[in-house]
Amino acid sequence: MTRDIQPVVLCGGAGTRLWPASRGTRAKQFLALTGERSLFEMTIMRTAGRFPPPIILCGTAHVELVREQADASGARLVVEPEPRNTAAAIALAVASVDADTLLLVMPSDHVIADVGAFHAAIEKAARLARQDWIVTFGISPDRPDTGFGYIASGAALGEDGFQVDRFVEKPPLVEAEQMLAAGGFDWNAGIFLFRAGRMRAAMHRHCPAIVQAAELAIAAGVRSGDRTDADPVSFARAPSESIDYAVMEKDDRVAVVPVSMGWSDLGSWQAVHALTPCDAAANGCDGNAFLHDSHGCLVRSGGKRVSLIGMDDVAVIVDGDDILVIPLARSQDVRAAAQAHK
Image (cartoon, rainbow, N blue to C red; front, side):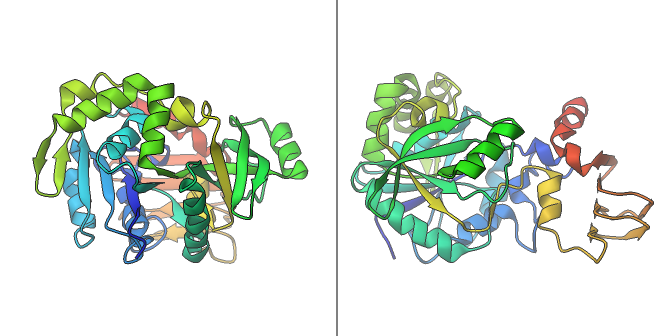
């Protein structure tokens, strides 16, 4: 077991891009979208036995589900009284451990098919983190995707990774194609590894209000067994910023470890379709569905009987009284329905 690497699982997302299945307490990370286990359970399993039990950052509404699905993991919970984005959540984790602890920060709603490749990348990242690099994991792109941010690699850091030259916001297609052709660009997976004291110092330099609020929230928090509830008054003072904006894009000692590990953030129904077992017509169905002269469709029937005739490249998602019908190519537009049916 690598005892100086402490897994941290960020479990606060709402997952509205997978409405209607993902919403409220049944957020995306707690759903079994690619198999029998939820995305959250699979995240925990990736480090089980090899690293210490995880620290899980979650909101009060998700504590019950976290306890249910992380039952045998020995996890510690840090409960956020309200969502304040990833920088504040990570600051809570930093404030909960010793300065020399290496924190492996992972979102709870991603798919990683090649866990062995992930573990090999962790070893490389750990070597850099022990030299006080703040390390992000870059996913080697296999297509010019416009739905991800990109990381441009700079100087090589031995055989372990590269210094980050710059971060690129989600690009238009032409720019994504140019980056793929040029090489040296990776998708930003939002997975990080760093020494806690190094991140604390970076936060005090780049986003002091966030780290100060988090440290006060942990110091004044309520502890009960394996659970710490951050103090709500202190935590509310933390500005809501992503870790990329608050630290990663500003610090001058950030590294990237590129890795091909069958990664997906399952950020849309189109992404779910890509990982769903399909028939000869590229239709992926879960539940009671009849498809005739239809191709490339995704159906999750939610216990209802669903029939599609003469349909191509659409998703039909049924959850209770809510039914979503959407072209897979427009999967990102599902947020409009999620907002309308709050």
